[in-house]
Length: 307
Image (cartoon, rainbow, N blue to C red; front, side):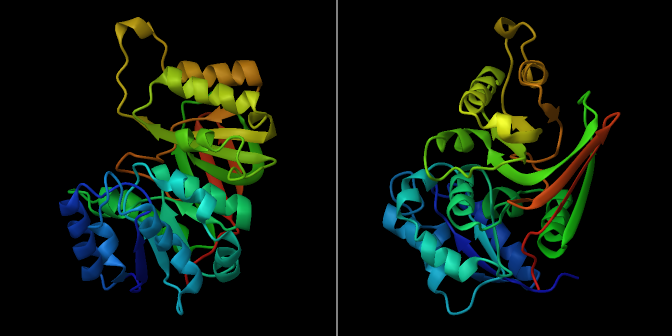
């Protein structure tokens, strides 16, 4: 039985158009004994956003002045909007209040922008993982996602294992980071992208064709970012249909080109991203990645854990 936790909701991105899913998530979490804070973030709306910029910014900046920190800060959903806030986050105050505290900031997709900005400016490790509406509010709740979420938030060391179609073999150690690829690329050339040396870069995306993914990866290479990585781990790349025009140009082709052109290992097929089943990964943690004959393993440690 899980210990009841305090969960503070934030909505720094798009309006939660699936209000039924959000209500379902709230009911599920409350039924397990968790206490939810800031529920008004679910219903706020201004244009396509979950409130105007000032309201969404306050969701994040308010964490620096809370008398008592929640156990978990959970994004309601992604979409678009986090990028508008990055210039105005109070990084000094957030670092002072949150760094080395047992609090887990969790989300993915558009939230990647805030997570990487916090990592770059404050060293804060956050969790790329499920969100309120899309995951906890899914009609069929993924036990895989939920179990991996709580494991990552409560275990000082986590070991993941999966089968990969990657032909690579080897063992790499480095800093685990990444998230949504489109958001990572949107931060290139800004102060909000962390400069990770010896990184294990984990990427995922949705609604992006293989040629668009390849173009973003070429941008990372031409910016000098790929050269600083030990390996790449690919998660799910969903909601894309290939056409006759592609003539076999698929994601496997993209990954192989990375190996051939840039001499970097690409370990594929991690259940991570916008699919129903997703692991939870701490961005900024220390990690070890191994693969041998398709048996892939990822271990991470050094992330904040709940008491």
